[in-house]
Length: 320
Image (cartoon, rainbow, N blue to C red; front, side):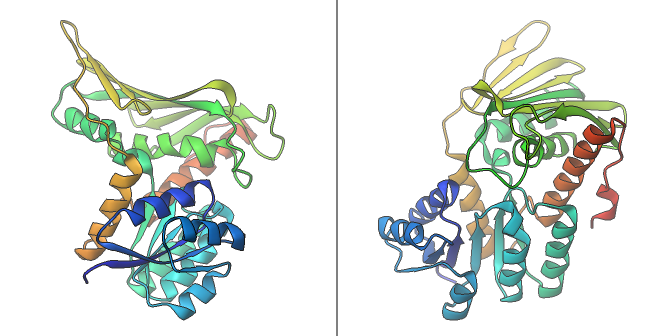
C-alpha cells in the first residue's frame, strides 16, 4: 500500500483540521470529504485540493475504494457512521467521544470484531509531547510512585457542541489521561455538578475517581473566561505539573525544580500520522475502541453520580 486512501466525514471546525493535516501527508490520499452541509464540504474540498465531496456517507462508500475513514461529526452520529464504514471493510478513526452512549460504543466494538477492522479513538492529549514526556518520566520513577492527580479543563462553552455535556466532551480527556497515567480503571466515582447556564446538559463537574488506594480529581466547566488545560500528579517523591496548551512540564522535588526543554509539536498531526502509519504498517492503533468505550463508561458513571448524589461503580469490567 503506497498511500492510505481516506475520506473525512464531517468538515466542521475540527473536521477541517483533519483535512488540513491529512493533506500535508505524503503517504495519504484524501479521496473524498463529506458533510451534511454540502456547501461546507465543497468549500473544504476546494481549499485542500480534494476532488470529491458529498453530503451522504453511503454515497462515499459506494463510489470510492477506500482504506480508512476519519469521523468528525457530532458524537450522536458516531456509532451509525462507524458501523457503516466498518461493514464496508474500512479501518476507522473516530473523534472523541467514541459515541454518545456506552451501548453505542459496544455496537462499534462488536462490529469491529466481526469485520476484523481497527478503530482508533481520538484522544488527542495522548499525542501532546508534554503527555509523552510526562509518561516517560513517571515510568522512570522521577516522582516516585504516583499517588494522586488533579485535572483542570475549563473555559467557555464551545458553541459547536450541542449533543453532549461537559463530561463527555471535555472532562473525557482527563478521564482517558487518568486511565493512561495510572494504568488502570477507577473502581468508583463520585461527582457533583450541574447546569448553571446550559440547560440541555451539564456545564460544570467536579469528580473524584478512586483507583484502589489512588485518587484522581477532575474539574471541568464551560463557564470560566480563561481556558486552562492542566494536570498535576503528586508522587511519593515529588509533584509533576503538566500544561497541555503550552506543552510544558514542571517537576518539583524536595531539593530541585526541573523544567524540561520541550519542542512544540502539533498534537493532531502526531495523532493522525500515528493512525496512518499504524494502518500502513498493519499494526493496531491505540487508544482503540475499548479505550473509547471505557472512557464513556466512566463518564456515564460520573453523570449518574451527579444526578443521584451517590458513589457509582463504572461498568468498565463489562467492556472487552
